[in-house]
Image 1: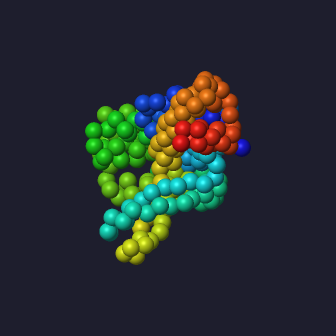
Image 2: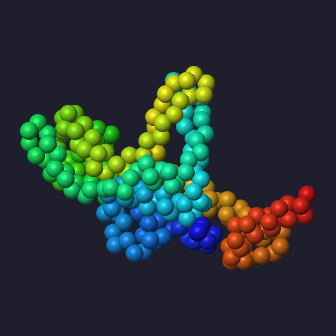
Image 3: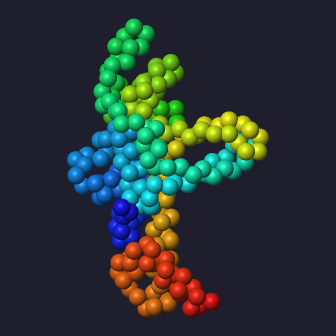
Length: 241
């Protein structure tokens, strides 16, 4: 069952101007009040919940766009939320031990809090080091992140992908023009928040159009189902055409 239009605009108002990571957490807190700590969810669980929320907002069908790394050709992808959730898997571990160069290293799944802290790092390299250090439970703030060698960073990244597989949603395909194989990562938080903003803007435009045509209030329009609202929009278009 999709989410009522009024709730969609409520979500949009609540996350306006927020960074996608913070907006994603806020969306989950509002849509799933039973979650005790959305910001503390492993990223795989967070992104699965976000995609579930997206299905409530707009249904199962999801459209994404990508470009070929070789020739730049734009491609449109039609995806299924249910299939993405199946690809992500249900298994997420919060803590485990990584064997690295003969040493056992305790590792934990990254969370939205870790991403928010890393967003404040002055460079991508320092952000990476901060996330690796966070996964190793070494630091909590950007200025405290120690420099980490590439081998350890790669080992931790691979371990995170293995134990929290939903934290990396990979889309793969081939270019219809040059045949180049490509693989791009889908960021559910950024995608859902951007789609919510687009959806909210479209809803507001529809409210304005129906208000002009019939003199209705925002509450009147948002009380309509999507199907009924589309029917009235078609009628309004015929009246002005």
